Length: 443
Image 1 (cartoon, rainbow, N blue to C red):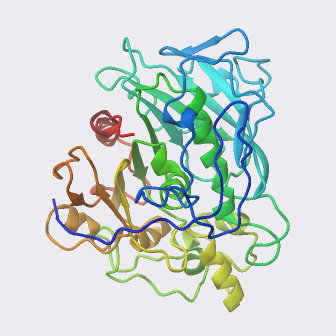
Image 2: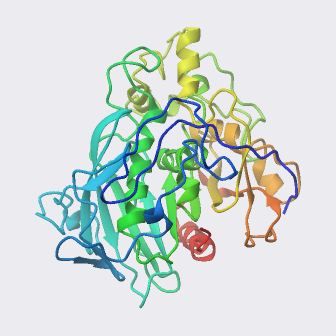
């Protein structure tokens, strides 16, 4: 495992005070850039907020009504609406454990329960999300895994279902399905074209959802909570560790086909050149493009301008669209890699990324801005690591000893193309094994 000493920084504050207590804690939005009490940690989210007592481990049961079993020891009868905080998620009672008007269990085969959350905040419009709970088939769950899907996230994440909950993995799966596109902030002002569409702001939706799960849906206080997401779902998780408070809550993050949201300004600009040899996976052909053109056009009939819908910018992901300097600046400001973003070191969250090494598309062209050039070679000690995220964990991680600086675990699979990692049983076993080995309690 490559040894290096990347710079460590304190994540800049977005001024969000976090409240996880059921009764609320009077959280307010403070001015951007305000100093944080958590400034001593290199592992904070951009809001800089310390998690409340509830965030240190959600209780198995919460007082306030008759409890309903959610699988593997957890019960659900808390976090009901209205919630208190900004952002905040609350249980509106319409999942299978409530009035059963939303989130039918038939949507996710194997699920034993569902919850419908209402997610609200000052930076985006309110949006609902279904959480489908698939309990471990083992006597106890080794870890709770939040699964985020690609695209607009409206289909439940299910890359591990049918395998991960079984022995020897024994994972409890929490599949997320948003009511509509999570990345569209729903507002009509601000953003690159003055019509809303701030994706960084919208990333507070999964932030609030993860906080709710951490407080109310974990199997136990000592069961690790981890996340797995592909394509745009990988972006949901990367926003959490790069900008929000995910590194305070998630013990391990697993990414596949990461990520289409690294630099909106580059990806949306048709004038951005091809990446050439500047790619994450060294075996990729030199024509890897950072553009989002794979989402539409003759090669993909019937597809929609997904990223344009996220950003509300008609010049994003458009043939012949010309961006103004102000648009470009606003598009980068909502990206994963914002202007001036400096490398971060995660000390309590491990990170793995699994990608296909042939037939490039925009997720590869964007990923290089986060993981650096030829990250697969760096993972094999065959070259330097130039990514923005490094690790320094108290426990060993693959070939990296405890207490040593190392890079995320990056796998480039030559046997799959574009975003197809996870389609074969071999890939699925690799993903389940990664979680079995690395979804361990780090907080």
